[in-house]
Image 1: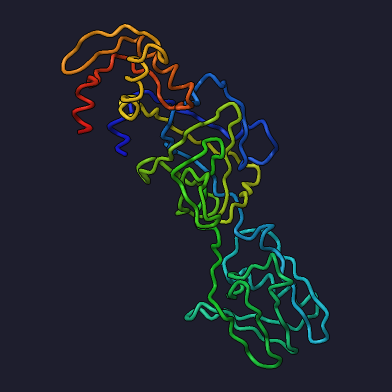
Image 2 (image 1 turned 30 degrees about the vertical axis):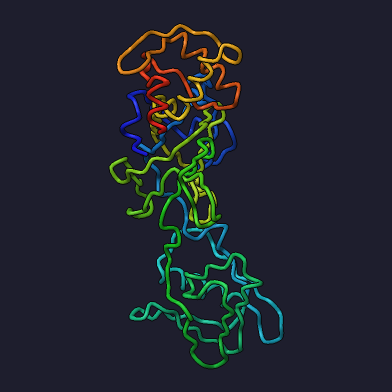
Length: 335
């Protein structure tokens, strides 16, 4: 479908400030009610993110990956809780080493920069069991997520993966209100509410800027709803980002798809039969035209009423009279 060819100049620009949200205190989950008459929901719309300014105030180490449970030789568990924040690897290891010392765990860490791994040293055998670690910062520790890791007693044990302290690489702008029909996500193996994905290319404390030149993707929305607008800023796992009280701004553009003539072409034979049949269809004025018939606006509306009654809801009358082939031309075409 060439949407450019079938889209007119009718569009809406929606300017959003998260501080105007009417639901909850989390700036990354925006909810607001907008005049429902602002948009005709029975039309199709192309929606894209025009611009955005999002403060990089969320943490890479947060409530989703802030706990390490370590099983000791005697079968008991020790829990290390990590303070939320953005760490480089050196500061992270200083923090967890101090926690291990406070817990008398006898575990120390060394970062191997050439291999980007961590060397673990312990005075007893320790186990990091994935079944006990739903919130483990695996990549900060240089470990493979979901694999049991054993730290051997008395010898240096190298992590089975590499270090990555930047676990959130992108911001996913999700808009459930727009009911996208052309965005698919592998995470849920189906249609997605993702409006766009914004790469993080700045340092903590700076502002993440986005403009439409960074992506030309538009989501196709059959029934956008603005009277209950919802926007969510999440990570790749669809978990809300905590902006720590800071607000974002963005502008979303909605372009109406004018596909009237394309839709009418599908139903021309049926509508013609309705008009020609005195018993089942309305009598409507028609004007001779070249090369076929020109329906007046009145005639088109009458025909649409018949088609709508059969639940063909996407047809809408064009602004100007539509020239269509005559019955004879249609029959010749079928032959």
